[in-house]
Structures are given as C-alpha cells and as structure tokens.
Length: 318
Image 1 (cartoon, rainbow, N blue to C red):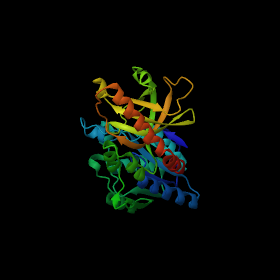
Image 2 (image 1 turned 45 degrees about the vertical axis):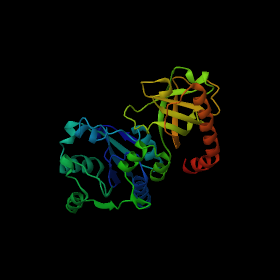
Image 3 (image 1 turned 180 degrees about the vertical axis):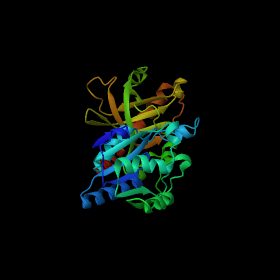
Image 4 (image 1 turned 90 degrees about the horizontal axis):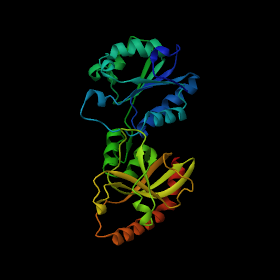
C-alpha cells in the first residue's frame, strides 16, 4: 500500500475504484464500504484507492469544539491495508484546504491524480467548501465526467444507524461492550506506560500508569474496566481504573492498569495496546484502605469470571 501526504507526489493512477472520507472509527458502515470497493476492484482487476483527511475537519472548522478521535491515523492505515487498498492519500485538513470548493477538489485532485472509473462513498459523506459536495452533487458532477458513482446506504445494528457519533457517545458513557457491536472490534488505543505513585503495589495491586499515544484520543467514562493489553505481541488480561482516585483525594485524572499476570520485563516507557472489554463499575470513594482493597478483590473476581467469555469474543474479532 502506497501512502501519500502530498497529492502532487502521486504517480498518475487511472481506472481505479476510489472512496473518500474521514472514516473515524472505521466502524461497520465503513467496513461495508471497504468490502464493496475491494470486491469490485478485484473483479475488474483494477486498483483501489482512498482519500482521507487529518486532523478531523470538525476540529478545524469549529474551533473551540474539539472532537476527540476514535482512532489514530496509524490505526486507520492498518485497517485500510487489511482491505487491500493500493493507494491512500492523507490530506492535511487546514483552513486553506477548507476553502477548496467541491468542484475544484474533484477536478484538481480526484480526476487529475486518480482518474477513477468509479467513486463509492457513504450516504452521509460531504466534502468541499461549506460541505457542498454531497452525494447528490457528486451524482450530477459524474454525469459530465468519466466516472461512475455509487452511494452506499446506511448500515443498521438493532434498528440504530451505525455512525461515529453514536459510537463516540457510547464510549463517553462507558458503554464499551455495546460500542463493540458497532465497531466490530473492542474499543482501545495505543498507549505509553509512564511512572506512577507506586501506591498500587502497596495495596497488593501493582499498576502501570499509561497515557494515549494519540494526543486527541477519546477516553471512556471514568470507572473500573475489564481490559486486555498487548505488550510485544503478548496479551494480558487485567482491570484498569480511569479517574481521580477519590479515596486518596486525587486531583489529577489518571489511567492505571493492573494485569492478572504482570509482565516479567520492565514495561515503563514501552508502547502497549489497551482494549476495553467491559465496564465493571463507577469510580467511588471508599472509607479506608481496607475497604478499597476488599472491593478491588471483588472487581478482580468479576473480571476473572468474564475472562472465558471475552477471550472467545476477542479471538473471534481479532
């Protein structure tokens, strides 16, 4: 897969199948689009290409209303590659690009550098200045151009339309096990292990503090979660707490993970991937250390009882 961050460096492509969008989360709806474009490209023995934008356009167009990311651009590229895309263009979305009209975008980038035989997009995708590039705009434009257009209908799960905004709302509310149904995988992200207070070891629950690699990463609601963490290709079940540690009158938001089988090697400053399997409970303030420790033991027992169920689901979706 060839990845470009400057469309002017693209070698002339022709007759490809092209899609475009932000693809935040690469959810079920996006996956259906990827499958469709992949199947058609394979049948025609032609290349498949994708145009995406970074950062999320909303974070440029609506300053002060920052939208947290469901996934990093690196994670998106991994998914694009699994669906067989040959070419990916990452457009740096800035104020200048936001003023490019839909017509200019199609003429000067899509046709000039990709020359697609077919463009396939989701029903709700918009592009160009003031979002004028709707599906109806694209249909009209294609009539005077040399490419076909296909608009995919929304994908539903349990009568709800799959969308990035719905998934984002579920994760903000801590409903990670439900979000999995719309993502077709567990929600999670890459993180770096950082030093903590060391208080967990004194309680008999050694923890690894972590921070997301993606600075704008969406973090689930505060609370205790059942997790699975990948470190150097090894997987560890555990539980983590997201919050302020009210029992210790904490003031700073902290993310810390306890592994049921703690890695033998030092993992500080190492990259890990954490996936949130289920939410166990709200964060709460305990009366004393003894009460906290007893509840942590209950939390651990709850998670261990869930291990077989989630091990099977995790193996099926990864």
